[in-house]
Length: 401
Image 1 (cartoon, rainbow, N blue to C red):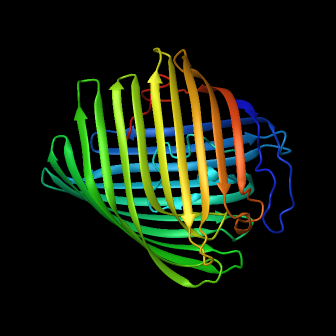
Image 2 (cartoon, rainbow, N blue to C red; image 1 turned 180 degrees about the vertical axis):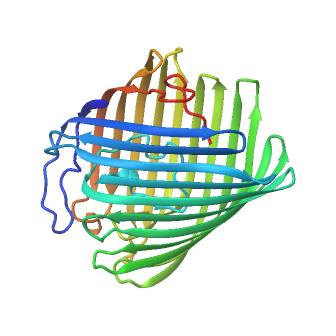
Image 3 (cartoon, rainbow, N blue to C red; image 1 turned 90 degrees about the vertical axis):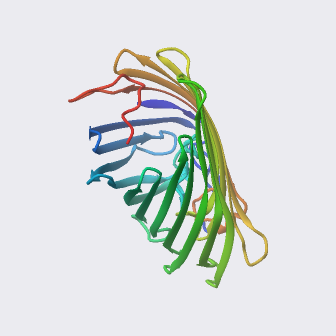
């Protein structure tokens, strides 16, 4: 249960065609959520099932709470001596359109991207989102392994078809371990995507992406280490313009890099950059080239208290027939502290900043704010109970897959 104050609950003045100006609404905000999770794992297989319900309260903006929820399944198992099969399924209902969930890229945003500054719902636009993923990993001796993956994703708005998106993605990654701390990766990915335009037609696009590079992990001591990965390549996109439906093709240099430094068991830092093609679902009909950078830190101050910080930046660009690019920039920052109380209870408090700006207000969907600036302060209480099986202390992460 978390409550606080937002200086800008809504997106403010709408300037797109047919959208009547609405005043910004500032005031209290609250979130209450509950999750029931089941985990079972050993050295050869793992299964995680989780069901979450979410209530959001904006008394100065909405008459009552909004209701959302998510179901998550994640599992893997070894078949025979080395073949590994994995499957994951996410099904989510979200009554609000939030900028942090707009982007649909060929590579999921890294941990910390934009989520460092969770945005309040910009306006009510209910959607059902589904992500199904399958993966097969095959080792080829002690040094080489190959993984094949397939992902099917749908983003459907329940009150209108405009903004609906469906995509299929298939890919392969080969990994070779050169020594204990150095490995090389190479990957290829194809995505076919279709999104429903405002006039009811469907805009189809296809994307190819190939990249490769090294990954290094080195331990300085038993308690400190550094991890660095750099992948570079290119992407090729075939699509149609949202204005005149004319076909176009484009190449884009692509890449991603991440740096993780563990200074001690109580202090770590993570940063990264990536470039990819993306679709801003529910906001525009264009395909964008998107650059994203983020930095996050985590520090355990005492046995019971921890502090985390994060900053992020995202810039999406799409060319237009007029020769003037349209841009969508997002800035975010957060500071959050967590304090354990006993074995199961915890307190949390944080400050969050979020800002986005779209360069062409006339190109966004009615109701979507081209410019949005928000500061928020929140405090809350959490409870974690083990219903059955082996539990763990509050503040400790569950076993990772």
